[in-house]
Length: 211
Image (cartoon, rainbow, N blue to C red; front, top):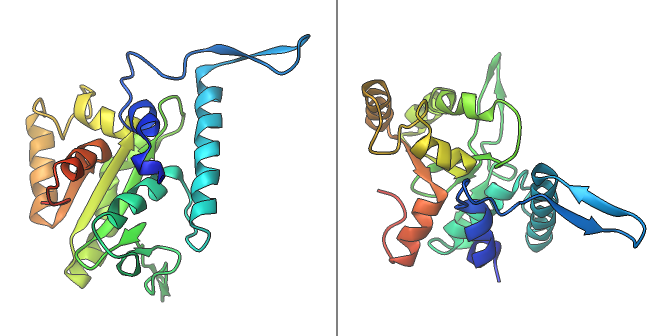
């Protein structure tokens, strides 16, 4: 079974309800005399690393950097032949340096579009969430030059925040006027945001993956 078809992964990591976290603090017994108390962040990291190891073992020829790239790759494989899906590590356009200009290349590519994967762990730290809106700017020149759309797939907490966070809600019905204008600008330039759980629902309904 692929990771993307594992219901436990879908329910407990991809589309987890943060109000009912799967990664509750618990005790893991390493020995009778030395039980170990593990926090939610540690549990998620163990869960994540285990799945990432499984994914890399399943696809040894694909140099995936994170779990979400693997999940999105598997999702694409249910729509496209594997030889039509390229990763940023084997794509002929991979991070070339042309003079002083660095050409950025998204994580995945199919015939129809480029795909950039953005993940945020539920109990992770860092500034990834703050940088999400710079992604269209990063790849704008590439999409314009190649006349090829860019699909940005948000995974786990990154998707949740884009739909529900009061400061970042741009994909939900409660988006403010600034966010609506931002999304409209991106769409007018062939750049769109998606949530992975949203795309999984489309697959279940046998609907086209992208608009």
